[in-house]
Structure formats: C-alpha cells, structure tokens
Amino acid sequence: TKLVAPAPKAESFRHKRSKLIAKLGRVAHSAHDVLAKSGEDIVIPGKFAYGRVSKDMEDEPLSIFLDRCAETWTHLGDSVTDDDGRSAFTISAKDNPGVGVYNLRQFIKGDGSSASSRLTVAPAGSRIVVFDVDGTLTIGDDELADEMKAVYLDELVSGKRSPEPYPDAAALTKAWQSKGYLVVYITGRPYWLAGITRAWLEAQGCAEGHLHTTDRNRDARPTQGGVGEFKAAYLRSLLDHGYSIDYVYGNAESDVFAYAKAGIPPAKTHIIGEFGGKGGTLALKDGYTGHISWVSEQPDAVQPFALPAP
Image (tube, rainbow, N blue to C red; front, side, top):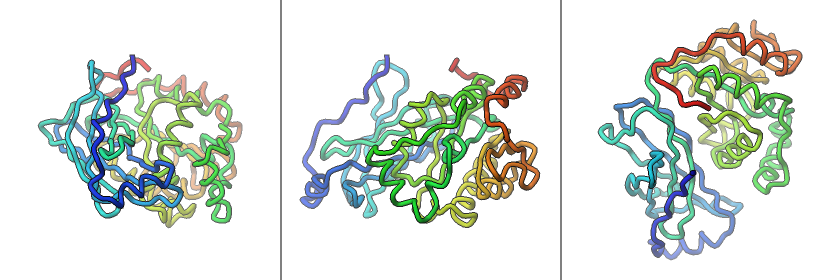
C-alpha cells in the first residue's frame, strides 16, 4: 500500500507577506530528484513559489519527510527557504538511508503545501541508460523553439496540452529497466515543470527513474550553449561520481553535442529524427518498435547492487 506523507501540523506563516503570497493561486513548488552514493552527505534541494508569476516564498520553515517503505514516513528534519524561495536540506552521511529508491516530500509549514521528489542511492559503478524527453519520448521538439516556448510551457502548466508520445517510447524505457539498468531522464524543461513531467512519464507507463530538469531558465534555451551545456555538465558529473552511462537517447543537435561533450561514445548514442547518424551516432530511422527487439538481445546489466523487480 502506498503511504501518504503526513503533512505537518499547520502553523502560521512567519511573515505577513507570506500569507499574501500564498493567496496568489497556483502552488508552483518543485524539487529535483537526487542521485547519490551511500555513506556520503546528501543535499535535498527545493524551490517554493506561488502563482503564475512564480512569486518566491522567502524565509519560511519547511519539514522534510522520506518514505523508507516502512509503516510511516520518516521526518528527516526542518529547513528554511532563502530569499530566492530555495532550500537545501542536508542528510548527513551517518543518516544516509543506504542503497535504494525513496520518495521525498517537503512541506511548507505555513499552509501544508509541498514539493515531491525522489532520492536514489546507488553505489559507484551503477549502470545507467539516459533518455531526453521532448522530441525523444514525445513526438516533436519544435514546442521548445524560442518563438513557441512561452506558449507551450504555459499550456503544460495549465493542463491544456499533453505531449503525444512516440509509439513504444514507454516500452523502450521499460525494456532497459527490465535489463537491470537505472533509468535517468534529463530534460531542458525548467525546474518548475518537474512535477508535470513526472506525471506525464507515469501516465505514459514509462519506467520509474531519476528526473533531472534545468535549475535556471537560461539553461532551458534549445541551443548547444543552453540545454546542450547543461546536459553535458550533469552527465559529466555522474561519470565523475563513478556511475557508468551505458546508452543515451536523444533527438536534437544539442543532444548530439551534449552526449559527445560528456564523453559518451557515438556507438552508445541513439538519436531519433533528422539528426540521427550525425557525429557517428546511431540513427533510429524506424522509431522504437523494432529497436526494442535489439534491446531485448543485449546482456543484462551487472549492477553492484540488487534491483527490486520492476
């Protein structure tokens, strides 16, 4: 049975302005998924804001909970947002929960609103398959072109748009998961679309995995210097932490650039769409349906830990 995280007892906001901000309407909180190793400190980030203008909730206390798959959620501790509405709660090395996948919830104490994310604790040597989202799992990437981006993102937030998935895109993510791989989703979407993106992946039946969005709006620019550099830097950080990125999937020139700059060999880089084959990458000219058969023929991942059944 899936447990519901216990919202802390409601308290009054620390500041009068916070009560006014909370009345702006839509809760716009977000939190990055975190991938970390056992035995080390883990920083749990969060961003808390309200309304269409994403007004920051400043200097307000939070409560952070973790689901250990026990009878109740664990209260990890409390934090306070800064003047940008951000928080960074640290789980000390001695309290690191160890290898596993955990759900996280961060609650604003003033009104009980929250941000959800996932913590994956995996040792060095863990084997990963990476997927871009827009234009790779969804059909079409022109939604993120500069001239359409504001409208597209606004429609995602309002629920007026739900991107159409590529046929068998979800099945492809599940095929790699069934081989024992950790699945990482990396996207140029901004951090405030993290919740909507998780919901879309779940609705399509994609493999459960680690989601990484941009932390700054400028990193979402669909260029090599924007989203390309953002993706390259994050993937490089995973490699530097000892993780093994065995295969990557993308569609855009910025993906080809990012994967190459991160050091992913072209022979491990699958590109769907017009840029397939660029830079020696592997072109997915016929979509994913036939490709899944190829995946099924690949050896299972040899992980330094035991994965639960999907």
